[in-house]
Length: 127
Image 1: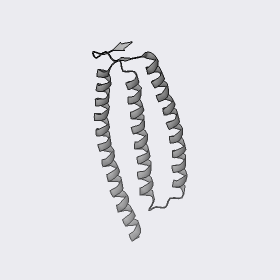
Image 2: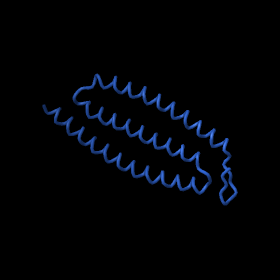
Image 3: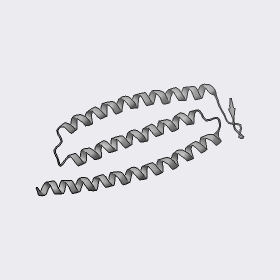
Image 4: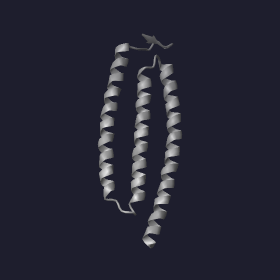
């Protein structure tokens, strides 16, 4: 059984139960993403040239959401395996730092795509 300096113990059964819960949530999320991707694909079939930019942003946003949820599941998985509060704190700090960097990159990318989509839509409207 893991113990930190403050005397806090994370029982093995609790870690196993938490890990099982994370696995079940991941499975449910994977099924949700699969259905969502099929719905997005169906919606894209009827898209026009003007809507292609929006579809691109929609696909990228969905991809980012999936990446972020995967990162959260990875974090949860490592958190339930932590031996003590010190390790939990370090894991959380690392996760938050990485997520802030990732969200910044994702925001810039979506912004660039939105500008391009608006430009493309403007050019298409002129034609």
